[in-house]
Structures are given as C-alpha cells and as structure tokens.
Image (cartoon, rainbow, N blue to C red; front, top):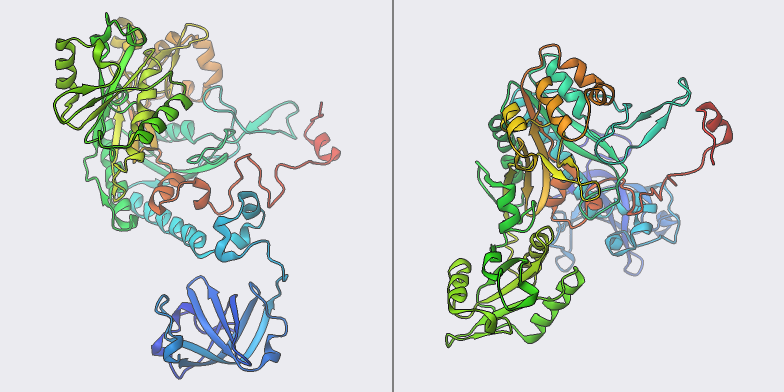
Length: 583
C-alpha cells in the first residue's frame, strides 16, 4: 500500500476486488486507449501492474495520449462479465473515473510501441532507453537485478564479510585488458585509470588486517562487446578472504551462488553443492573449452594415437578428436550438410563421420582406412553403438580441441540435446601457470600473474614452466564463465621467481606493482578470493541471450551511449585544463 499523496492512494496493481466500492486515486502511464462510443477505456500502467480506468467525460481526455503520465481518481467497480481480463490480477475490476489530470504530456508519434520495444533496432531502443525500460519485460529484468544484488549483499553479510569500497580513480596496470585513462589537471602529463577490477586494493585490504571483504564492484575495461560482455563497464561480486585456501573460497561461493540460483531461477533445477570440479586439461579434452556447458551430454574423445600412421592423409599425425552422437543415423542428409557447412565456417577443412548402421555395418568414407584393431579401439573409447554417428575433428594440437568444442556445442543445439530446465555450475581448476607466446617464443602468464603456483617455490625451481599449475579457478554455469579467482601469491620470494620466469626483473616488479611489492614486506597473510559477474548472473537467471537486456543503461555494441551522446567532444578550454592537445 502506497502512502496517500496528491497523486495516488494505491498502486495500479493493488486495485483488486477487495477495493470494490472504495474511492481511490492511481497514477501511471497510459498503455492503451479504447473508444467504445462515448466511453473511453484506458489501461494505466505503473511498476506494480496495469489497471483499467473508465472515462465517461471525453473532455477529461483532451491532452491524453499513449505513454503520457496522469493521475486519476474514482470508484472501484466490478467489470462486466464480458470484459473480464483473466491475464492480469486486476482483470475483474476497473475504476470509474470522476477526476483526471495529465502530469506529463507525451509527443503523439512514439519512436516505437513500448509493448514491442524488444523487436526494435538496438540503437533506437537505446536512444530512447527510458521508453524501452517501460516495457514490462525489460522493466522486470532491472527489478530482478536489484533483488538479486540485494540478496547477494545479504548472503555475504550473513557469512561475515564486510562491504568495503575501493577507489575508482586508480593507476594504470601493465597487465590485463586495455585501460580507460583519465588525464590529471594538477599533475601535467600524468594519468589516472579506471580500475579493471579492485584486485590490488582487495589484496591490500587483506594485508591491512580485514578478514573478509566484499563489494558490488564496478569494473572498467576498454574491450569489444559480445553477447555476454558489455563494453566499457560491468559489475561483479568481488570478495577476498585472509588466511584462506581454495577450499574456503569454494565453500563461500557455493553458500552464495547455490541459494541465489535456487531463489531466482524460476523453478529450474540447480546443481547442488559441492559443485563439480574439472581440471583445465580434462575440460579442454572432454568439452573442447574451459567454459563447458554440462547440460550438453556429448563428450569429446581423443583418438590421435590411432591415426599416427593412418593411410588417411588428413588425419595422419594430427590431433584427432571424436564426438559420438547417439541415435543420429536417422537424421536427414540436410542435417549432415548443415553440419559440414558450419564446420567450414569455423575454419575446418571438412567434417568426417562414420555411421554405425543397424545391420552392424559402418558407413562413411573414413571407415575403409581403419583396420579391425583401430575400429575396435575406436568403438571401445567412444562407446559407439548401432544407430550412432561418430564425428571426427582433426587439426593441429592447438586448434583441434577448440574446434571440437564448437562442433560439440553446435550438435547439442541442433539436436536439442541441451536441457534448458537446469543450471549446471562447475569449477574449472588447475590452470597452467604459464604458456609460450607464439610471437616471441617466451613464457608468459596464462591467467592472473599474482596467483600462487601449486608447488610453491619448489615447482618454480624444478619443473618446466609449462608443467606448473596455479591455484587458479573459474566458475562456469551453462557454458558461461561467471567468475575467475585464485589463491594469491603473498610470498615475495616466490613472486619474484614467478615473475622472473615470465621475463620480469625485480625492478620491474618494484616499479610496475610497487604497492603489492612494498606491502608484502610487512606480514602479508595467505589470502584468496574470486569475483562472480553480476551482469552475467542476471542474464542467466532471466534467460536472456544478450547482457544488454539486464543493464539499465548499457552502451551499444560499438561502445557508444546513443542516449547521452557519449563519447563526445569537449571544449578547447577543457583540454587546456588537463594539458591535452589533440593531434
């Protein structure tokens, strides 16, 4: 119940049969106007819902049109039987209006119908985002986002975390994505940077003696847009724990994410804690990605050793992966043609397959190149049965796993194998600490450079860099990476050695990461954390395919705010104040 004021005594969605006979006042936006010969029926919408108001005096409607805002007072009455609308909670009643005032006039020619805004071109929607946000579906997404964030805060507080804020104006970091830079007025030629994440600050909070920190943190990265990545800025549930291990972080993540997905998941099944743990190497082999969608039952099998000496030249000496699809023989020829077309579109030279026919024979051009021993081993590894089809992906060892992952996903989607009624969460663990840069041939960090190597100093001294694993981990849900995290390297000697392998000197460490280098000389505790992405979480929970559907004022895919006209030009005086001259 809204407190009485001059505009409304009730929200539109509160006008129910219990209010029949009462004098009420409502306010909102006109969604629809229907003229029934001297009697006007208006659908009035606010955040709570829609109510029908009835106007018998046309003079009241002089300045009324769709999407204007107004306040109306009158008596709640029961609708005629033939006008009841069972689709809305207020559908059995209406307000017989005796007073009406337009509060905000609206231009007669709308850029789009609010109810159909989601079918409008994106740039038009975003230019008039305030109208787009009136669309009930878009509006509900933002309301749900607010509820999810509120619940996340509640859960973190219950688990003993303090909500602390870290700076927005920070220093540029040489690691990670491209920074957003801000020139300094007071310090000529120097720049601030918007934080890509609160990473260094939250580690310094652990050194400062705070036990458990969290923040609904804005992060800024100058990256190109994707369906699951908004350009410019995003929000994450950033948290860090002192005197903590990987297991402690996983426990908190499960205590927060599992109930969140259960509460807001619209009745879908959520994988229970503890979430499945998949080593990175296994994930790349079985799923062809480090972001596996576990709802897809198809698995990838390595057959490379079977084709080392094969007479089939496209497979000889290559990394060969296979995917067995149950009961696929019955698919039409066009299905196989479309799969071949997709394979070519992602850079494959073809897509071989063998059909296991019901009579026990095998059909397919590759079959004739197989010996009986190879065929038996292939059947054993892949679980091939009558009626199944086995698809082959062959390429260099760096590309074959990723190509196989894309084929797996495409097969799952085309054959409707993905169970849409579930949220499957898992951890990807045991990431490699280093990889070799293709351009330079030198070792570089594969993930967060401040992660602790699993074997500590001993591994750094005695293992080949490519064999060193880090305490790094991701949370993945339904093929979407929700979070990355790590046990941090808090030991300065181990850190110096870890950076040395990646080509950094101690002076580099001092100069580029001076805050951590200095702080870790004053009793740094072991610490660990992660940062689940809030935008992606809301995207999954709303069932949206594009992250911009769950952000109130997103940029378009070209990193522009077409509503505000950003980025835009500034005056010569503004440039002079910050010591900038445009070339």
